Amino acid sequence: MPASTTPPTIDPRAAQRWQHLPVAESPWLHEEVARRMQERLDYIKLQPTRWVHWAPLRGGMQAHGLLTQRYPKAASTVLENSSADVQRAAKALVAPRWKPQSWLQPKTQVTTRIDQPAQMLWSNMALHMAADPQAMMTQWHQALEVDGFLMFSCLGPDTLLELQKLYQALHWPAPAHQFTDMHDWGDMLVANGFAEPVMDMERITLTFETPARLLEELRGLGRNLFVGRFPALRGRGWHQQLLDALAQQPLQLTFEVIYGHAFKPPPRLSVGAHSEISLDDMRMALQRGKRRDGGLPTTFTDPGARG
Image 1 (cartoon, one colour):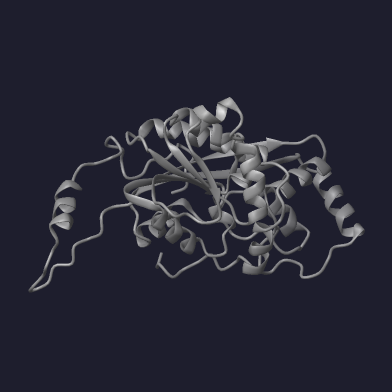
Image 2 (cartoon, rainbow, N blue to C red):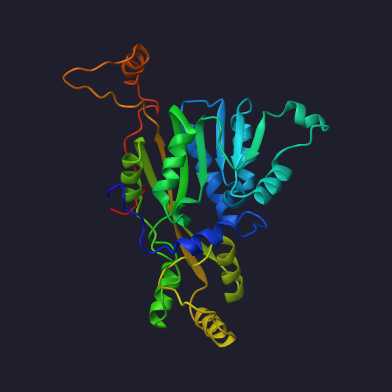
């Protein structure tokens, strides 16, 4: 996939509105995905001394505690979209200085801007809601030190298949924008300066007691960012029609969850007919031959992975 390609089905204005909506609590699904993703850190040998938590209010606040337990001596930077989100995240994650536990905690900075690069960047369930995901990857790349690594998760194209089929049967526009395949995400990571991307996926199916509970869960997970969605407000009649249609089929939703990690490699040396290379760049180039992930293959999938 070319570096300039972005998912064409996302309305950027709708995506921006979603990013600035207040967050009551992290969705259950996001917390569960974060728990599963942190288990994948067992394969990473590098122990970061600084790491970045990307938008945990939406991505999973409980994950911050899991990562702090895994890296008890590492300082963390929590990045949020607005000053209001910074205040909410700081209140939940940073103990007041007068409390004894704050003396034992590693330093946590909550901010809207990353000033110091880190060895790990953690982003859970954010990429599929970005109008310009490659711009987000560029920010990730800039936030990492050389040889630092990225851990991320997002939704894949088999997400909400039940709802997609229902909307098609009712001749309604799609209930969500198109989600990107994990292999395309890997290509975009490489195009944006990352190396050795490792991707895998799994499907999680949630069941619900009532149609209303199903829709409530969806509202917590995101919004319909599809550019071709119904342009006006829906009425009560449409809402009741949706509830009735949902009640006539199994109350379940499938989510394809993609997990990935990649490293930030040293910058490539440009060698021409006459080149001047600094000693530091030469040393870095000579040292970069070592693999950092313990010999994991470039890609691996579960038996249900897309081809």
